Amino acid sequence: MRLHVGCAMWTHASWQGRFLPHPLPPGERLRSYATWCNAVEGNTTFYATPARSTVESWARQSSPDFRFVVKLPKPITHERRLAGADEELRSFLETIEPLGPRVHALWVQLPGSFAPADLGALAAFLHRLPRSHSYAVEVRHRAFFEDERSGRLLEEVLARAGAEWIPFDTTAFFQSPPTSDAERDAWTKKPRVPRRSSALTDRPIVRYLGRDATARTVEGWQPWVGTVTEWLREGRSPTVFIHTPDNADALMLARRFHDDVRSRLPELEPLPEPMPAEPLSLF
Image (cartoon, rainbow, N blue to C red; front, side):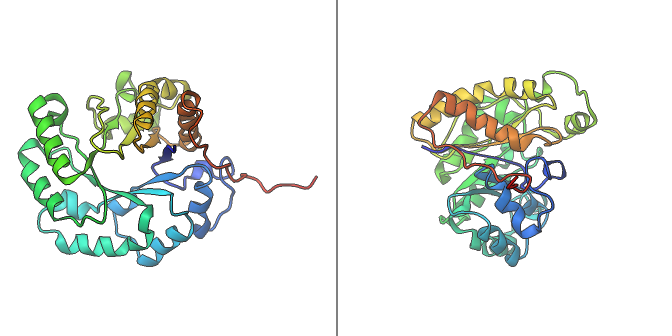
């Protein structure tokens, strides 16, 4: 029984020397991160498709059971809105091929303007995708969360494609006004939608945003500890990504979430021992 947890990135300036060794060459950063967490969000691919050699380096630095949830490029999802992007999609799929089984799901994050009226485009797009990958969709239009019929129609589209619905849970974050520059920045950018905690497949994915204060972050994720525990008992294989406004402690918090679930499920496989941030001394 295994729970995969991770962060929005595998390198962060505030982690260096605290959680991860410093300095580390680019070709070792993911390898070090993977001793802390066993999954990562592939956010960078949204902004630019990497070179194939870069993806090959990612594969060398991670084991086959490490999970990437890789975001489709912005031209496909936001600029072309899933229509007429076959060439961009083909190029992207060829580029990430070296990751092999590490690609847990291709992540279709849709803009907030993508509404229930656009579900036909999503259905057609998912129908065209190769079955060699799993897919997960993140929507941000409030109608999918607040209008029962719209939510049901989206679930039907996803079910026909065997795709998952990724919730981005920001409810704990928006419970009270921001108290730092990082929180104020996130306040203007993050989606404000109700929490959704239903799994459509045996591979649910959760994105959770906490606060700067660790205690508030941990308090806010308690409903997910229960949900994820039940998913594991049902035989599902969940992946949970922990975010905070500045992500300074996200690496440690992801492991803490895993610990919280393991306290309820002692049979859960532990995470690996983290690589020391400082070289070991003989004295």
